[in-house]
Image (cartoon, rainbow, N blue to C red; front, top):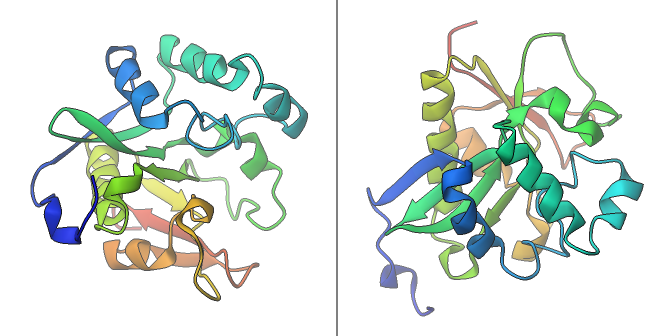
Length: 200
């Protein structure tokens, strides 16, 4: 697939659901042979660096994600278009993401229960079509329905043109447009943003 942005009409056609054992195969198809990027399988934020690096071999990271799904632990949200998974956002309690909990730049600002959105993956032919914005709104809807009160993310404010592959945290603008507010900015280019599903 390719061509202009009008080739694929996504208006009102995307469906957002959490990753479960029932749609695991669709998730695998979306991530492909590279596991989204360098055999990551969205385990980068969940594992210590040594374990994550080791998991790149022999489907280690893929199997680790599969175990989370089998155990029915929150992993993330899939965006479906015509029964095909075309996008993904990691979404789970912040404490599940070890690298966030140890981060100096994105250190916790309070002890409130928070669910984090540390990364996205959009299928190549669906990039630059507003899918991230729609996925963020899907996450907000899911959070409200699941009584999740605080959504936290760590988007990029690029200094220049950045390749798609390096924008896995998402861009700040779609979060701002969805109503997220900056709550900490130790890094000028990587602010911490939050959305409160209930008024503070």
